[in-house]
Amino acid sequence: MASTHFTSLRSEQHKAKKSAKANRYNVVMSAMVELGLKMMRHKSTLDAAKFLTAAGVPIRVITRVLLRPDLRRNLKRRHFA
Image (cartoon, rainbow, N blue to C red; front, side, top):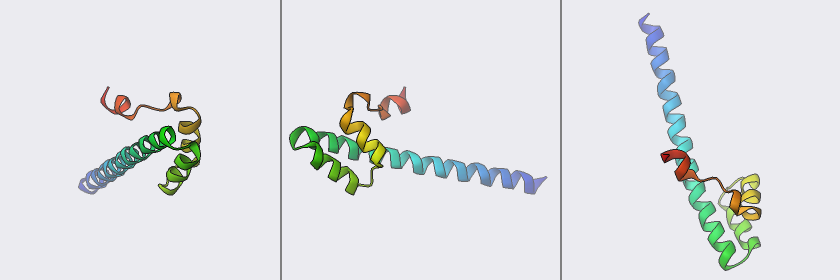
């Protein structure tokens, strides 16, 4: 019984670490997207797309936020509401 409890605890710890890592990644990606949107406003959509690609933002995210910034997901609202 103790080993089952230990295995379950390890599994929960692993899930928590994985979730924390995903949250950090989302926060970093959100910051990169914000910079890309500013770049788009001040330079060009092409410059913003190049920047976001170099930053490792997935192409489907780049396409969505640069072509339809009004549909951008609100990370703060989703995590703090």
